[in-house]
Length: 164
Image 1 (tube, helix red, strand yellow):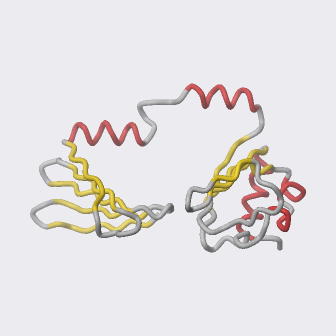
Image 2 (cartoon, helix red, strand yellow):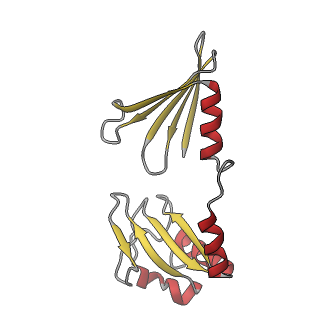
Image 3 (spheres, helix red, strand yellow):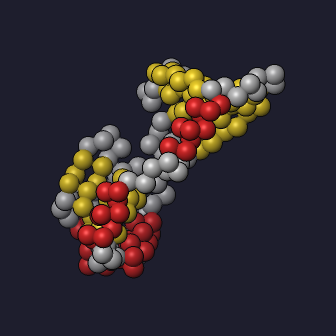
């Protein structure tokens, strides 16, 4: 994530957020407490595709929702009980990850880590559920992995450092 903060004299402050998924969000906090949020088109980053205006109370409530303060999903608690020591983690393959351009089989993920890749979602949103060893990992893909905590540490290392 990339964040840029700019003072707007007489108006307030502007924050531009570039997400890991490539989306651009601009938030303007006015001195009167009003917030404006603009979501921009990925293809044309100067074209706003949506805008939301919130007053101070609304903005604080929405931030609590997004931050997970107001709601704890009960389904997650049930999943944790059902899975026991197993953990599901999501890894975004940042451009510096050495696993990019290699297949799951080449990396010997399961053999080296004990973890299993249960899904890969590419940057273009193409989904691979229960991918085989021939699937090549691409930049900015989201890799969904199940395994115990030690397995997760090992797979994180493999994704970052590749086969070495």
